[in-house]
Image (tube, rainbow, N blue to C red; front, side):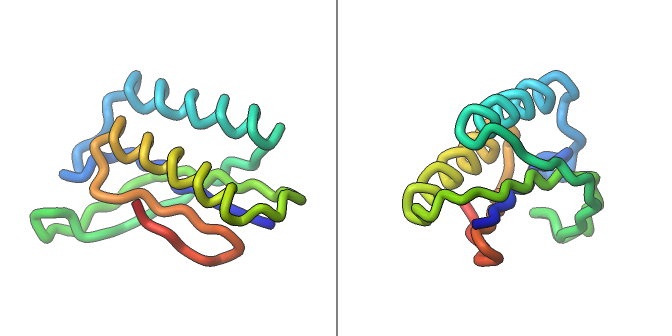
Amino acid sequence: MRFEIYFPSRDKDGKELEAFKRFECFHKVHESLLKFFTGYTKIPAHGMYHGNDGKTVSEEIFVFVVYTLNEDKKGLQEYLKGLATDIKNELNQSAVIYTINNDSYFV
């Protein structure tokens, strides 16, 4: 199985995240992924979306990618939903996306 989780650099209002707050959340995701899967790949990417005010927001993001032999899709989805919810709450996001085998989910 392959999954991805998207990690932002701006909040839901398009404001750049405070460096320490972003690092602290990033570190929690990093530690969680290493504990749960023993490894991951982090890919830098560029995203664009319409903010709450209707303006286009451009941001640099990271995509965490994990390949696993774990076939427990339900368990994996629960784990990722929890991780995405933490990112959403800690970094003031409208939504966070994660994928499992190219199926996309938003929290």
